[in-house]
Structure formats: C-alpha cells, structure tokens
Length: 489
Image (cartoon, rainbow, N blue to C red):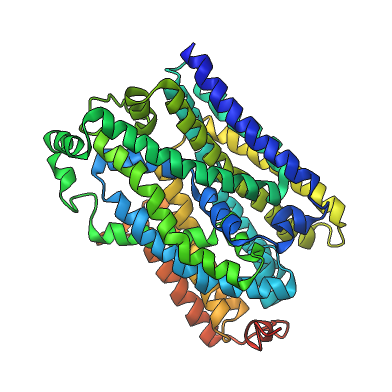
C-alpha cells in the first residue's frame, strides 16, 4: 500500500506539471523564438523562479546533502553563500550585456551571439558543440538521481531503470508540448513548492529527534569533526575553486544563459539577480543541514544511496516523504526540461542552420527542435543506465566544463580588442586542459589544492588575451555592435 501511495503521489505531481504545460501550449506561438524564449516577455517572479528551479537538480537535492553527510555542513557555505553571490554578480556582468544584445539583434543562443560578433560560423558551432558535450552528463545526472531516489524510497520495488525511464518519458512529453513558456510557469510552481516543503521537512525531522540541539549533539557524538570548520576535504583552496567554477559554470549553462535573453525588461533582469543570493540560502540551508544532521541520527545509508530519501522515510510519514521526493523529481525535471529545450536550440540554430540548411523555415525549425529533444533525452537515458560516476562527480565535471567558456566570453563582451583567433584559442586551450585533467594522467586534477577547473579558467583567460593582443581582427568581425551606443533606444 505504501509503495502504491508513494508512486501515486509522485506520478500525480508530474501529471500536474504536465497539465500546466498543456495550458501553456495553447498560448504558445508556433515560432522558434516563442518556443525557446517565450517571445522575450518573462517577468521578475517567473524569471527568478524559472532560473532557480532550473538549477534545482539532483546535484542540489541528493549530491549536496550526501556531501554534507559525509564531510560536514560547510557545503552550505560553498553552494548557499559563495556560489550564490558569484552567480548573482555574473547575472549582472554577463547577463545584462547579453540581454542588451539579444534585445537589439534577436539572439537566442550564446553561440549565435558570438558567431555574429566575430563573423564566424565555426566559432558558433564550437560553442554549441562544447555546450552540448557538457550538457549531456548533467541531463544524465537528473536521470540517475531520479532512478536512485525512487529505488530508495520504495525499497527497491521500483527498479533504478524504471525510475530513470519515468522521468525521461515525462521530460520528453513535457518539453515537446510546453516549450519555454510552459517550463517557466511550472518552474515557478515547483520552485515555490520546494522552498516550502524543504523547510517543513527540516522542521518535521528536528521535531522528531528533539530539536536542533539534540540533532547537533548526536552529530558531535558520531562525527565531532563535522562541527569544526575546514578539514581535509573542505580546504580553503577547494572551497573557493568549487564556488568559483560552479558560479561561472552556471552562467554558461545553456538553460541559464538563455534566460538572460528572455527577460521582459532591464528592471526585470536587475531585480532578479538582486534576489538570487537570498533564494539560494533559503533552499540550500535546510537541505544541506538535513544531510549533515543525518550523520548523527540512526539512519542507515548504504554505499551509493542518497541520504535525503532515507532521512525522510525514517522520520516523516510515507505520504510526506513521497511528496518531497515528488517535488525533488519535479525539480530534476525542471532542470532537465530546460536543458533539453536549450540543447535543441543550440542544435538547430548553431549547428543545423549554419552547416546544413541556412534557409530553414520557422515551423520546420520548431519541428526539428522538438525532435532534437527526443533524441538527446533518449541518448542521456541510455547513458544513465551505465551509472558511470557519482552524482557529485557528474555535476562537478559539467559545472567546471562550462566554466571554461566563461572568461573568454566575458573578455569578448567587454574588451574591444578581442579577436576571433583569441577567443577561439582561449576556448580550445581551456577545454583541452580540463578534459585532459579528467581523462588522462598527464594533467593533474589539482595544483596546490586549487582544482584543474579553476586553473583551466585562468589558462583560457591568458590565452584569449595573449592571442588577441598579437593578432589582427578579421574584416568581418562586428566589434561595433558590442561597444558603440549599446543600450540606447
């Protein structure tokens, strides 16, 4: 009975999200711009929550509490505070400039913007290809998270593959039907829902164990080092490296980056980034503290399992645990659906258009985008069945991979002397360096405690500036559009 109730709640919640998508479908124009960006008409609340919910992934709900459980609550400082501030700054520094350019020149993707700036379809394709490369493991991370969560919540009654397949099917159906408008609407619903239920979950568990004092005492008895700042895992270098690469990586995530183009006005964009750090703290504090306190509670966590479902199953009623996991799965879906939508736009506009069919019609591009969603999601699902790494390893690789794009892009946005050769060399150098650190022993993964992801970012910056300084801009580079009177109506 409990398994049936749990599955009923989870499927019911997903069906509710699908219903919202169907309503959005009825108001969506059959154009690529409306499918990708809701015709650039998104308001403050929706922009803030759709960006927020897009980042509420398996990395947040499962990998984060797992790290806090194993290593201590300092993860709150990395994700909840430092990363929130870093991304809020980038939201203005990168996002505002992109919004101005998108409003004037109707850009939909980062590759489209850079390709036009530097007069290079190859650069456009390079940015799209790299983005799709790093998007793949992050979509896969959501499917891995959903599969393991359902398996743990139902004590194995729902196999891993079934759970991963369930969220994949809903993602495909939802994105193909809803487009950006539907995604943004349900993101707002899901973001608010997860804020409320996560705090209720924290209060419920603390009430069951005797309050925060009792939970902290139990943690001290089990793992006293968790109450001391730092340690072998949380070194200053690692915490700063991780916060910076995640913050810069988030700014380059296709689904987040495209939201810079979707804001309805300058005021919308600025209000949203100002509220961002507060929203991060409000969500990450309860979920990560639950993970940390669970270390001292009588909760058995097997190797490879996630701590949050286990704690909820132990200390809250079946229906409430299922409701929170349903919300978490919906949050994973809100990440994946946005990724799939953005990935399809990168495929159609930055790869198909420039290299296959330049005169593709709006309706044909809309159809190709929906077919691209199906193909990408299916491929990621097949990859998730292998479970190649932990949730944290998958997420960290994707964040750091995207972060390698950030500084070359930032230089191009603000330095007139940036050349096509410079930005191309900077992107290639940093990507090659970071990929080598992941897959070969030639490039170390850390340098005096600083991660290869952060070192790679520095390399990309140096190469971009250095090569640009010694090369001449090509005749077809449109530097003026970035620097002359931008923002004037």
